[in-house]
Length: 284
Image (cartoon, rainbow, N blue to C red; front, side):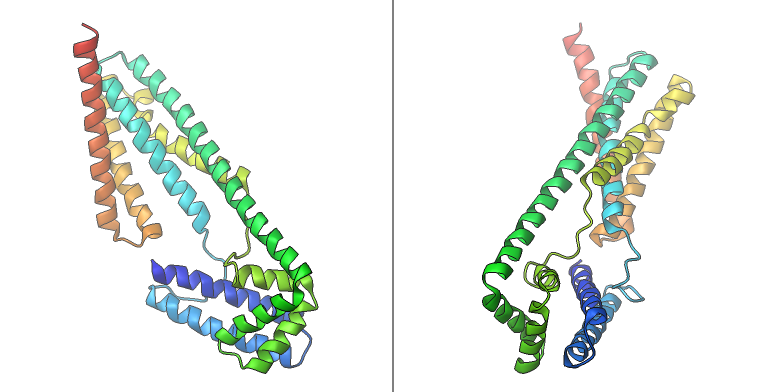
């Protein structure tokens, strides 16, 4: 997991240096940027190989944010509605009640998770925007200090003192470029593409699909068959989503899948018992 984080950081540096190199005029500054990009690329490839990946990690070929939202949204919808359906089944009610309860659970889970995803992304973006605005003001009111900080940042990466100062001085001539570098290097904020609406609807849609899994058999099969089919499909889905989470967590697929399988089994057992107890002791 640590290797993956370091790979992403090094990859962001490669993209940043290459972007600045393309904009720089030929000369010592461009040469320094080329050297920094090459060194960061070498580090990124080495770390990627240690993490079990191949290729050039600074190319955006993966959609980690999208995968995370889909996996966790699906997982939340599946687990929550599976427990709800199991509870209603335990209450031994008519199949129509199970369907109505399950569909209501789908809507409620999807809206809840979608709203949570939207608000989380909105808050994160606001934090980034605030920090970037502060850095912009620092560049405006304390340019000499910021230039010194830039030079020190490049020296910590292995550049000699004078080339680092020259590069920092060159960057400070363009406030936008200086802000981009300081945002990435000092604040640790890479290029942000967070869209709260996108995060919200993807998370909500994934939640709705996960919540539909335990309900779908009741819509197309006889009630008795539907109960066992719902259980089997939901348990298989728990294992599958657990295995998929291993892509994000770095754990083994089998172990992660079994963890989620046991969680699903526990949720089903508790939900069923709660429904059974309520019917036997509260409605007699």
